[in-house]
Image (cartoon, rainbow, N blue to C red; front, side, top):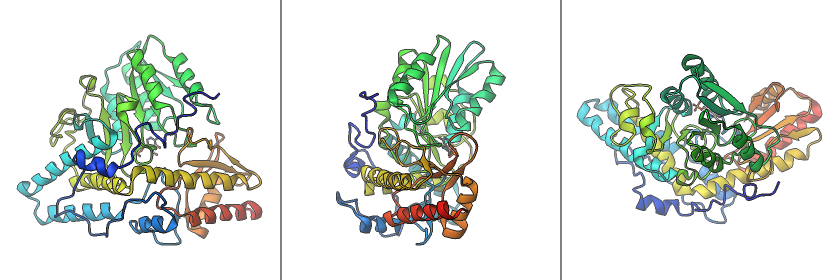
Length: 433
Ligand SMILES: Cc1ncc(COP(=O)(O)O)c(C=O)c1O
């Protein structure tokens, strides 16, 4: 099944992200005002030959102590120190003077963050809503698009509950139907995924909703191609980017979805309870606001869809700072580093007798999530032993569908941590838990 889709490498995007820091200058990259600027010594851009010594410096941007190995980025990433400090300083500033005149500057800073998000995703600030998380963005879409009996929504069977159960619940209320597109395991290849969606569309399909990178085994979906299929049929597309925002090079100008959602607290290492929703301005008028209150954004869709009441704007400022840290280190370098650690994991895990790796090693099909079955060991007992006895944190996956452990390394992990993790798993495979 070798086709142009299967050979597409997300790391080597057509428009390489080399020089995001340069882009930062031309697109008005976020610069924190003095009252919020962090104090942690800044890390330099990753050199082409970045080795363990460089990534150790990156690790210093995080609070995790040596000896604690967090390989759980797909669940929750640590917030980096520059973000923590920026949020802290902005919070102090507000609490030292919570008057409206003093807080006005935070609204201006929020608009600057919107411009930074838009530049990173290659869309316009007018198309960005700053939400609380991916779940909220997904639900703003399923609650805000007018659908009725006779209409149909196509969802990938691999979607998170906020893009699956949410549609099913709303279908009960509004009378439309929801149809699942199966996603077989192992990754069937991009052509097979595209074919599955193509044959699932009917004249009644109004929306297609799928996950860019699945949380289960980290399968990468051919998002651009599925969005194109939808567009050709007049169907709206929703791409859940919870597991791609902050790790893959997201070029929405190229992908052309109608909606894209993400959370800052995952791969971006940003603040918790801040997320993004992209809304294509061509179809913006079709999305009703789910919450109508004060403190909306200043431009485009945010004026109608971001009036969510009083927010913690200091956290929103942290979103801009997280993007700036990534731009400084280099997005391409971060992605390549995480992919390298994941590849190392897969190679070494496959060497352990009895281990079955569910994630595809093909870089077109996976990024930095690795799911595997540790033979007959109970996944949740193994995960508990790893954390409580070894200080290694990951996620367990129970049930009949690809049970096992999910390890998701990121740029703050070292090769030594990956080797220690594999050696520890080998030990428990031999001894039992
Ligand atoms: C694919 C996917 N979508 C959505 C979510 C929900 O993210 P949040 O809890 O940040 O809203 C997750 C969380 O793990 C996810 O993996």
